[in-house]
Length: 384
Image 1 (cartoon, helix red, strand yellow):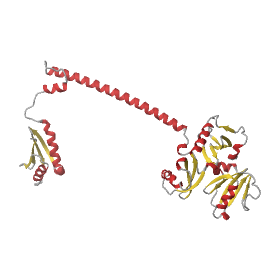
Image 2 (cartoon, rainbow, N blue to C red):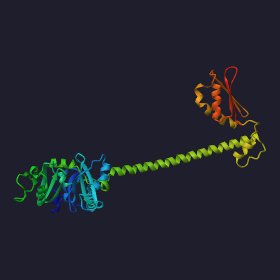
Image 3 (cartoon, rainbow, N blue to C red):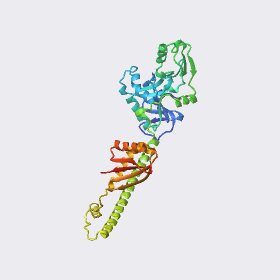
Image 4 (cartoon, rainbow, N blue to C red):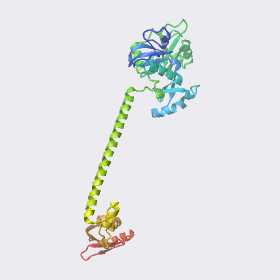
């Protein structure tokens, strides 16, 4: 696999000029350097390897239960590890690399914006963006993987990795704790004589391409997050279709409501005509102009001393008062005459009449409860 530094060589047929624009590419691993995308491997998921020199890889302790909470706490967790204002940086949260410890990528917003623009112009707007150090074999706390290309070295460590001029590798190793137990495996170009300490493993001209593709596919960090997340074409189509469905549904609902309104108006007009015809037959010569709702009640015969609209309110009050006794009551008959409601209740409990009487008084119902000769209890209540 060709590393990112090779983007500075003379462009070949495998080089994309980002200004030209391309059809979307669904596969292939590409390296990004300057303003060019260079194919590194034609296989694998569409991925752009970006230079690790411009990505700060950190291992951050985030002992929180959810990704949302970790994202919220991330700016505070790294503020002592960086020299730039957090607002100017894109923070990408990676996978857990140790218990409650996560890999984090830090990139300047202006750099990330330029990379995304180059990817879009090169037909790779759907591609993941992975620091090229993460394409190297997975390392652990006792092993680093490194690749040398010319004067550039890329290193993967157990907590991410770094890249830069070749002397950086030895300087970083010198600063590592327990460096005597640290095994560094080197691949790529042969370093200058005396550049590497004795005991480092020289792997050969490069790592296995199939293993490298697997490393990229399983990368613990993708920089395309947050505002730079890949915009899925399928999602936009889905929302556009959903919008059409909602719009069509709204139109259909409006049409149905309009049709219902027209039907109700037609029924009301027909009922009004029927009422007018009936009133004309019942009261010939009466003035039926204007509002029938106000005119027709005046034509109805007036009742005597009855107040039929008092029955239900009175019965409701009695029922409410007797509710605590409901299980012991069996109503035999009920009559309403004038303003008086009479109710006969069957029950053999000798104390029930007094309890009913007390319940009615407690509910402030003008009523009495008396026991009849046949053993029933008669409740007499007045609506007046």
